[in-house]
Image (cartoon, rainbow, N blue to C red; front, side, top):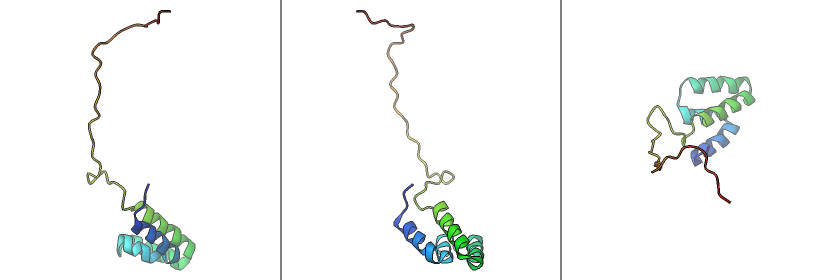
Length: 91
């Protein structure tokens, strides 16, 4: 799964100060408050949660619910003649 340049920069920011990366990615909401508490209790859990948020809400992921996927028809070659049984090669 390719990451955008913004996501790579947020991974670097999340390594040093994960609440800032989560704030940029998700805004001031529940994810930010959870990350802030984890970061205050211990930097390592906050960093892991920051990496998780940046990875989960990746910019280049196609969202199925918002119609991010587009289906295309696959051309099929219908056989003109259907043969049944086994065919033996003559020697």
